[in-house]
Image (tube, rainbow, N blue to C red; front, side, top):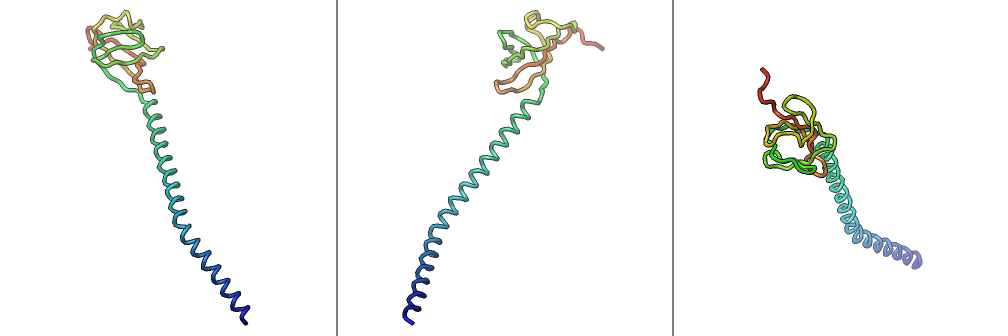
Length: 135
């Protein structure tokens, strides 16, 4: 009888110890796991926003007009803002013919199209306003 009681007590003590260890270790571990999961979720959301924003920004062509005041190596100044020039930029003069940037009379009113890239705003097309607007 004593052996049976002893075994039962030993089992209950072991069970109590394992439950005690489990309840003490489990909340700490689950808190750590939750933090890690939330960290992954927040990181994923940030990455998605950055990638999505970059895709939208790169694919959008922006149109504007202003006064071209300076042409330098790879950069033009329009309304006191600097824009980089795409190597394959299309430049159209007052007569509607293709020309080079350096042949435009400065300062001049221009219509231009540009897009945002990782390095900044890049002009894709510049068109000089005609002296007499067509009717």
